[in-house]
Image 1 (tube, rainbow, N blue to C red):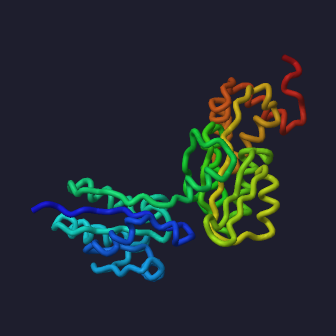
Image 2 (tube, one colour):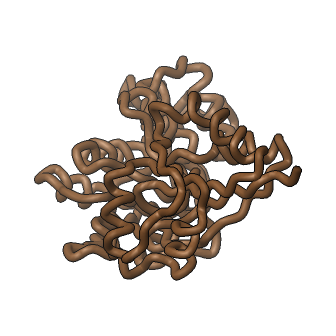
Image 3 (cartoon, rainbow, N blue to C red):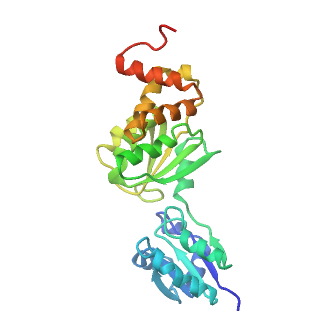
Length: 288
């Protein structure tokens, strides 16, 4: 018996009028509709004027591991399973990856209904370079882990895209300003395609101060990639600051110095001297 088909369907990130035309047809044709939030799915189907004919089941972070085998079994028996999340494409910081991987392993056909993407929409609106970018998803909640993750991207030349919740936005932007530098350009994209859509473009330090007053809505942050510079342009103080950020994130000083030296392309001794100078208030260039 032929296997079924897993359909990953993009859903609107705000305005329901952005729903892809095929979405309604797939909702009506699927044997099973797996939804991240069945209540939101009901609101969407009412807005689109369609009614799922198949069985509707929940598929969210809390039951993803347990429900995946059930859905794969249905797929191998010939079912057409439609996967939708609250907004955007499944698997992009949303449930879906486990199901796709399991379906592929079993030889099940996987296809997609392309739809709106907060990542691409924010990139296009940011005013920052879009020819090369990388998506970083959500940062860790704990400060040390968050600084460590940001430290890994400190020398990334491509434009960076992050998702963030409104109540953590201010501290995330402050951490970005600390690691990337307060002047690094960025854009905070809020409530994309919705009534109160807003795109605020500024340096990370300025954006952190703005966000401290409180921000609401769905948030996507786009950050300019690291500029190309020499160690001389960075200066000893900047080298020491980068080591300090890594130390605060939990790295031992020796490893932090080595990592900064490798990222910038200078001898470890030069970074070490910069760290010593920062602590003693001396000029590391003197006496050489």
